[in-house]
Length: 237
Image 1 (cartoon, rainbow, N blue to C red):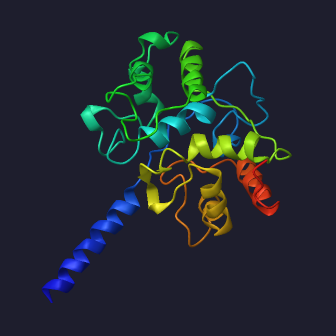
Image 2: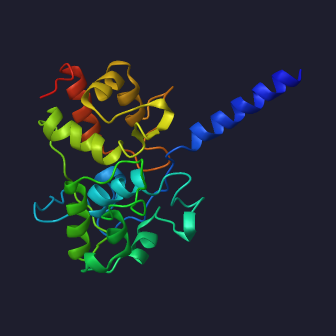
């Protein structure tokens, strides 16, 4: 009986950890325009993204959400070291709009020692991701969004890899296997596409844990891109 009770406790603990892993809060969204667009964010329908701009809802929030505002770190519940990065209003407290070099978030992310965010052994942000953050801050750190997606592009290199890298890999990499799923390589992404977990999770299909968990659903256009890539044979193109 005692052995069964101990096993039950282990199962409860494991389930609790799995359920809360990489759970995020919904960010404050731009307060303008009509509903719709990027996952229902107001003001994004028909708003074409400028190639010279970086947008909070499209580019920055997914990165911070999947690498910094995870359960146990800087989420609304844990707020490690008193820092909560789960919403725009909280994020802007650590930013000097127009000056990335003086912004605490930026300075912490570009560190190369154990003080960087996310901390080792989590992978550091890529050069491209750091550039996006720096550009967004220098452009005023606006709480902005736009309607950016092209369903005719579903190549792995230009569409699928960037989506997975910016919105999923922060929680699904060898150092942080959320749900036991690794999405850090083409082979791993293809495996998740083959067994149905990739599409089922991002589409919030019955029987799958919705991803990103506790956050905004990916825009329909991006879900279609992934669906097309899967249907086309999941090529590494």
